[in-house]
Length: 225
Image (cartoon, rainbow, N blue to C red; front, side, top):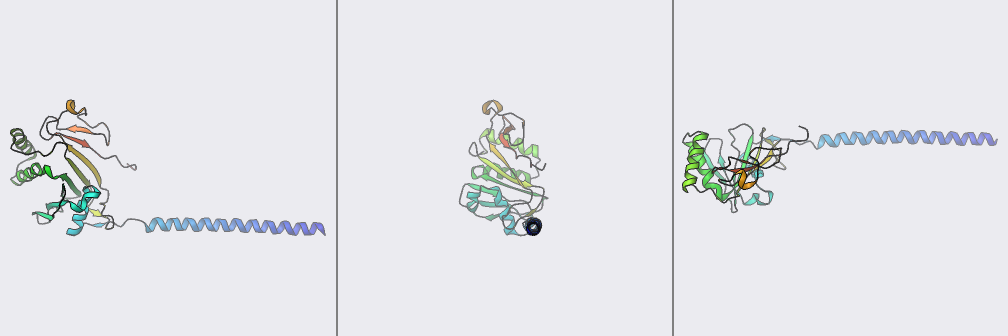
């Protein structure tokens, strides 16, 4: 009789263990399903930058976050006209992405650089080539005719190969940042910087010894790359 009672008790324990194991598997499977569902629902839905509001919002991503509300925004519209999209009240000017060009490229620069930037736009409108624009501004900067802005003025570039964005965050799909610090007529010797990039995100000096000398800081490559 005692042996029969022990056998029944052991049988109950085994059934309980099997049931518990089954429940755990069901719970794990349920969790896995929830994880898959969550990853699917959180996928970003990028849309085309097809309104003026979207163009301004995405272009402002080139500016430091704390300063975006006060930036002036200028640029070419879809008709090719150069317009002021937004009047600002701080030290930054944002050059909006050109909707007629593929991909995305917006820039934010210190307002002291506007004479230099505006002169470039003027010369391009006259049909001058890149090398011609460089030579003209070089001569004008050396003579003092062209104001190059404050030494150390920075240009922020937000760019990428696509022209779709997240309407909630205004981030452009695949876009990255590059920073340019202008130091007219600086050299490798005066700054201690190399004249060629050493590695991603490493500063180097471009166009040394000229009016357009500037420190380049390129983005780190994506981990998936």
